[in-house]
Image (cartoon, rainbow, N blue to C red; front, side):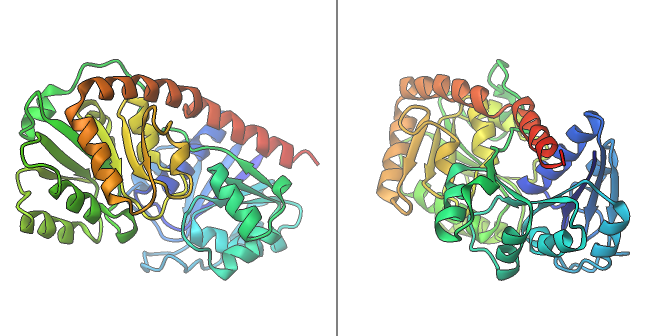
Length: 361
């Protein structure tokens, strides 16, 4: 099978990592795969170059325009793929045009966002052969809000890509490096610093915790809002409690050092961060946004709060910080749940089976 994966740019986000992962997995399964991006390189560019698929870009140099895809249809036609997988908002906006140019190919749109969909994205959803949604809630959004037929949508959850479950001992050296005592409860969030990821609210919420509780908030990632969040933490007098750890190509050491995963994001379809954290046994505290509730077991491996329920979020943090027994019981459930649903092998097979079904004719 000849597979073309289309992505606007290989930034460090979850969707981009999924594109590289799926391309490599399909290649290793014996398929001819090309990953085609609009912009060259990106944070994951070196990683893509080291994979067993062809990696090409449309822009001869980086124009810094995510939507600019010169020669996309001509390049797609020349590749003569049996299947085209569009990853990310920009690529999905072009999916309808690709399907029209390549009527014999199976063009797949992907629904991996909690944001409103632009008009071209919606048109592509109705023109493409099939849609892969990464959560059941995302599928319901497509069927109930946008009137897509349910049989045209397959739900395949994100796999955990950068980390695997492990019984390694707690990473005491990393905790010590960042000034966390053995009794300190480390709250962890790993995400790009964007307004919708809402690290600002996490900092504000933590500032409301009782001063005598022993906690730290670790924020892994880079992005546009990091400097504002740093200023906020300093202004709230949390300079010794909030740690900004920068971009994490492999956050596994952070999961092994932390105690609780926290997420106040306002735009998620399914959180890769929470899935990875659950595999490492971190209880979750998160707002109920789109598919976040499918990442863990509410009230068993963590706490799912109504969006903007700051009092409930604070209460959940307070309970987990004070109660190590509760953290241990949630940790056991977290590992069990994640290992049953989010291993890479399961999701690879689900995609390859779907690809085979769509290209049988």
